[in-house]
Image 1 (cartoon, rainbow, N blue to C red):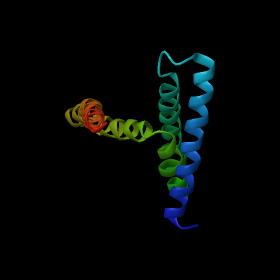
Image 2: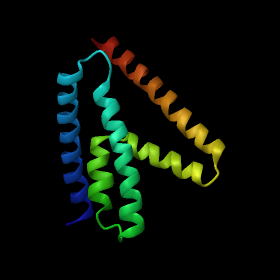
Image 3: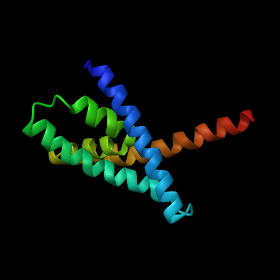
Length: 123
């Protein structure tokens, strides 16, 4: 199967799993806290860590596009963020890791606010 098709198929599966997980958790826990998002981000990070070792170090990586980029990318991008941050830390690049982690969160929230502000101004 071509790599792009693996990523696309995995993305569809991951996004569907995210929706189903979020819906289930919303029904169970209620909507006063983003439990669903927190769940998929933590689970996705765990799975990214597991697959990074299992697929990339123990296997030849042939399922990486489907599982890591596709399914986990569709399920949560936080897992990729966590993996990148850990790789920087493992390489002793503490300043880069701090800039990456803090900057990603703060700039993403800032971008979210900007996008919301622009959208609100159009309605």
